[in-house]
Structure formats: structure tokens, C-alpha cells
Image 1 (cartoon, rainbow, N blue to C red):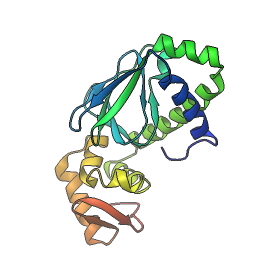
Image 2: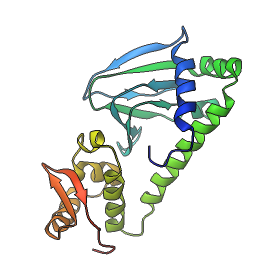
Image 3: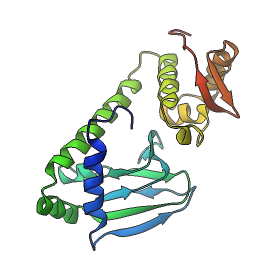
Length: 205
């Protein structure tokens, strides 16, 4: 995720190590093209590129690369279900919420939980900011800028059009029209539909 808190990776690694060493952990291989529906469990992913979708509406929430822990909010509220879709076959390690809570208490990992939850909350706030954009073009502009900040691995895993459509729910015809005009104007460079670079995107369209 972008704009991570200081020491976020250190605290994420502490949680990852503690959870994955549990004898209650289960490893589930999810092939590319398939999806995994989270339930009342903690999911640990240690590497790879994957996307997270809402359970309803197939709306893309975010792309991740590398380590991630999903399901920590289950400690404090009713489980929120997501679909995890890997860019290629990956292993998801799952742990019952009660076992994860026990590990956190035994190893006094509350500070690490706070760091990771705060970072994730900030990231989802930024996602929500994009959703309430004043118009469709502004939404597209923000999503292009968001994709441009992503790693090369993420940018290479999805076309610009697919990224915008899955994140926004806007019509394909409108998205393609906007992208075509931005390319003609020299504002963005794409290769085989994937984002290479942007210059300065116009404020209005």
C-alpha cells in the first residue's frame, strides 16, 4: 500500500511470523483465475500480486503486492467478507480468529495490531475518497494516478481500462473514450493497454 506508516513493515512482519508459526495455521493454494472468499478467519499472504474484491457487486477494492494480513478487524466486529484473487497461483495461510487473538495476547502484539489496522484504515479512507469524487472524469483521473503510483508488477498485471472499470463500475465505453482522448493529448502512455507513464492529467475533461 502507498503512504505506509513508519515501522509498518516491522510490525506487519512480527504479526506474520507469530501467526504462521502456529500449529493451527492452514495453507490453501489458490490458482490464478480462482478466488478465495474470506470468512471469520485471519488470512496471511506472504508474496505475490493479488487483488481484493468486495463480496457483493464484484467491485475491486485494491491491489496488493508482497505481504498482507486480512481479517484483523474480525477481532472487534462482525466478519467482513472479501474475495482474494491472485495474479498467479499463491498460498493463503488461514488462522482461526480466536487462535490469532490468543497469540496476540500471549506475545503482547497489541502495538503491532494497532500499526497494521491504522495503516489499513488510512488506505481504505483514501479508497473512499476516490469513490465520492464529484464527477466521473475526476474519478478516472484519480484512479489513473493511483495506478501510476503502484509497483511495476501491479501495473503489468492489469490494463488501465480494466483497473478503472473494476474500481469504479463506470461503463466500458466511457472509460475507453476518456483513455483514448488522454492518449491522443499525450497525457498518458500505454503499451498493450497497460500504463507506462503519465505526464500531467488535465483537471477537467
